[in-house]
Each structure stands twice: as C-alpha cells, then as structure tokens.
Length: 111
Image (cartoon, rainbow, N blue to C red; front, side, top):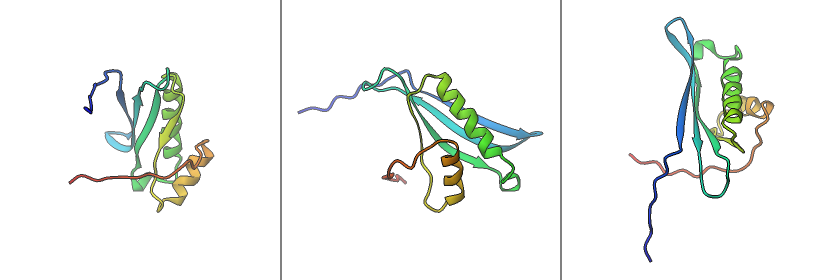
C-alpha cells in the first residue's frame, strides 16, 4: 500500500499583536485550518504571550477575545488551544472565556 500526500491551500495564520508605543507587549497566533471532515474550518490558538511587566492587566483576556471573534468571523466550528499543566491561572482564564478542558496533548519534539 502506498501513502499519498496532498497539500491544501486554504490554511492561513493570523498574528495578533498588542503594542505599548513601539514595544510588543502581547501576541498570539490564530491558525485557520480546513479538512475533509467538516465543511467549515477550525481554529488553533498558539503562543498567547503577555510581557511579564504587563500581566494581570486583562491583556491576555483581550487578545484571546479578539481571536475568538476572528474565529467566529472565519466561520470556524471550533477553536482549540493547548496549555501546560504548570499554568493553572491561565487555565482559569480560558475556562472563564468558555473553553472546556477537553483532553490531553501528545507531543513529539524535533531538534
């Protein structure tokens, strides 16, 4: 049996940035992906980062809400994100914004 590969072209990534003057103080990535199992795309959130000096000011909430709004605008049927077990405060934020603790991440790092 042979495995075939077919590239898709609809995928896209959107970088969200919050600035204070010229300094980036928060950022995150939203990827919009398509597959053959659904007519609508889904979104993946990655690297939600707020500069330590600007944490606990609601910036993480603002940037994630902007990403949720964009995922809805892109007609996504779901939005996924992952977070390390060592970030319980962040997990509370995600739950407050409507995300559910759905499963477990398996990861394979490449050097």
